[in-house]
Length: 206
Image 1 (tube, rainbow, N blue to C red):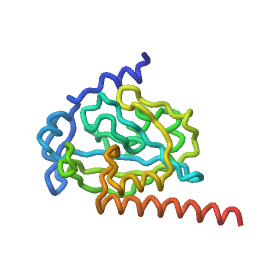
Image 2: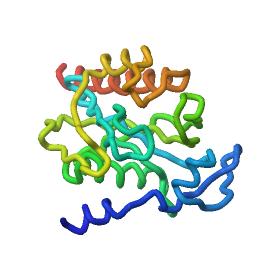
Image 3: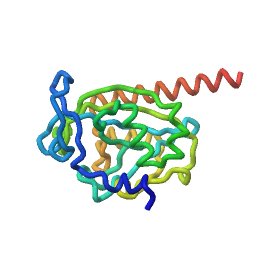
Image 4: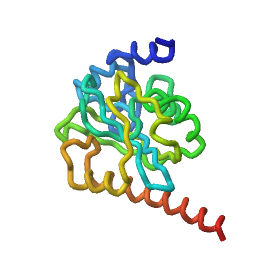
C-alpha cells in the first residue's frame, strides 16, 4: 500500500474539526465522532462533477463501512473541512482521495463555488449538523479514468443529471442528498452553469 492510500486508510473518526455557533463563529475543536454524536455545527464540502457534453454526473455509492449513511448514493465527492483548511482546500483533498488524484487534478481549474448553507441532517432522519460548501466541477473524463477510495467508496458510476435530480425530488430512499429549498437552489445554480457553458460553446462554433 503506498503512502497516499495508507494516510487515507489511517484517517479515523477521531480527527479534529472546528465547530461553530449559530452565527458561524468558531467555538473550538472537537473529534468528528463527538461532533456528530452531539449535533455540533461543523463544516463540510460537496462537489458535483459533471460532463458538460453529456450532462452525466459522477455519483458514488458510499461504503457500507461508513459511520454516516452507509450504502447511500451521494454526490461525486464530499467530506469535512479539517483544521487549518479553507473549504476549497478541503474539496480538492477530498476529491483526490475519493475519485482519484489524476482525474481530479485535471478538473480543478473548472471548479466553482455554488452556495454555502447550513443543514441539520437530524431533520432528515440522519445525523450531523453542517455549514456546507457546495461546488461544481466539469470534466469529460471517462469512468475508467477515476479511481475510487476503497475504504469510503463502494462504487463510482455516471447518472444523467436530470435522472439524479428526479430521484432527489422524489426523495428516493437510496439518495443521501435531501430535497428542500436549498437543494432546489443548488439545482438552479448547476443548470445556470451548464447553460453558461452551452452559450460559450455556441459562440465558439459561430
